[in-house]
Length: 445
Ligand SMILES: Cc1cc2nc3c(=O)[nH]c(=O)nc-3n(C[C@H](O)[C@H](O)[C@H](O)COP(=O)(O)OP(=O)(O)OC[C@H]3O[C@@H](n4cnc5c(N)ncnc54)[C@H](O)[C@@H]3O)c2cc1C
Image 1 (tube, protein in one colour):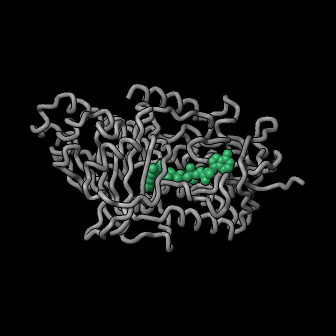
Image 2 (tube, rainbow, N blue to C red; image 1 turned 90 degrees about the vertical axis):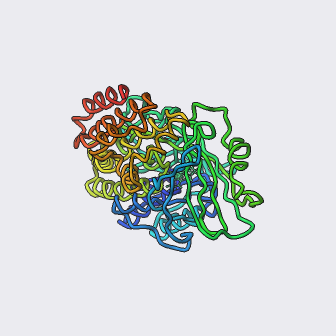
Image 3 (spheres, rainbow, N blue to C red; image 1 turned 135 degrees about the horizontal axis):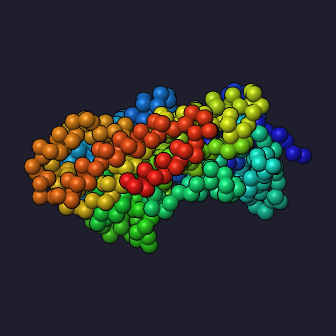
C-alpha cells in the first residue's frame, strides 16, 4: 500500500540526513532513501575537513561528537616551488567521515525519519506540473515501488539523479558544466612514527594537479589525508596516478606510511545554481552544487542549506502550498547569503587555475596579502578595497604583465559576481531578468 509522506529525500549523506533531521524534528513524516545499507552510509565518502569559518559565518552549530579528530588547525597554501607559503585557509576541524555520516543518519532516524535502504531512487513521479512522488527499487532484485510525497528532495550528490530527470523547461534542471567539476582521489595513511606537529598544506600546481590542487592534511599525529583534484577537462589524466608518480616521491614524509582508506569522487566548483526548486521539489548539497569553489568544501554549505530548507519546507507544509513560489525563499536566502561567497570564490578559482606555476610562484612570492587578508578573501569571496593600490605599488610583479592584467581584472570581477548574487530576486517574477543578466555577466567574465 502506498503511504503519503510530507517529504521524501533521496540520499542519506550530509545534506540528506541533515534536512531530514530538521523536518522530522518539526513533526513531519519523512522517508529517506540511500543506495547503501544503513550501516554503510558514509563509508564511501571522501571529505573529512570542516571549515570552522563556514560554520561560524553561516551561524550553524559546529557538530560535536566522537567523530571529531582533535584540534582545529589552520591550513597553508604553498607555492609550486615551495619557496613561499600563505596561511590561506581558515581553521579546519577534522572528522572521521564515516562516523560523522553515521551520526547524522542516526540523528535523523532517531528524530523519526524512516530510512529506506539499500534502495535506488529511479525517477520522480509528476502529475500536471508538480512532483508528487518517487519511483524506487530496493536493492537485491526488488520490484519497482513508489512513494507518494508532498515534497521530493534531491540530496543524491553531484549526479543529481532526480533533478536531471525533471522536465527540461524547469529552471532547476540546469546542468553542471564539466569544466566546473574536479575529479578527486584521496588516501588516508598511517605514519610509522607519530609526527611532532600537525599541519594542513594545499599546493596549487598546474604540473601536478591541473585546474585544481593537491593537499597533505594531517588529521592526528598518526593519520594523514593526502589527495588531489584535477579539472575534468584534463581527463583521462588519472588523479590516482598523479598521486603515485608525482606527489608521493615529492614528500618523503609519506614514505612507508600505510594506506588505510582510498577513494575518489567528483566535486562541483561553480557559482550557485540559478534555481534550486520546482513545484514540489528542492535540491540540496552537491546535487545543487553547494560547494565552496576554492576549498572544495561542501559539508558546511550543505548543512547550512539543510537548516534553511528545513524552515522553508516547514512553512510550505504547514500552509499546504508546495509550489515553486512558496519554495522560492530557499533560492533567495541561500543565494543572497552564501551565494556571494560562492560566486566570488568561483571567479577566484577560475583565475588561480589559469595561472602557470611560474605565475603562481611570483604571486605567492610577492606577498600581496597578509595571511589575515587572504583568509578573509577565501572566507568571504571578497577582495579588500586596498587591493588595487597594493597592485599598483607592487614592483615585484612588473616582470609578469599578463599576471598583473589578470589580477587587475580579479577585483572587479569578484565584486560583480558577488553583486549579482546579492541582487537575487526575492520573488519569482524577477527571475528571468536576473538569470539573463547573470548569464551575460558570467559569460563575459
Ligand atoms: C576527495 C574529496 C575530498 C573532499 N573533502 C572535503 C572536505 O575536506 N570538507 C568538505 O566540507 N567537503 C569535502 N568534499 C566535498 C564533500 O564530500 C561533499 O560536498 C559532500 O559529501 C556533499 O554531501 P551530499 O550529502 O550533498 O552528497 P553526497 O555525499 O554525494 O551523498 C549523496 C548520497 O546519495 C546517495 N544516492 C545517490 N544516488 C542515489 C539513488 N539513485 N538512490 C538512492 N540514493 C542515492 C549516495 O549513496 C550518497 O549517500 C570532498 C569531496 C571529495 C570527492
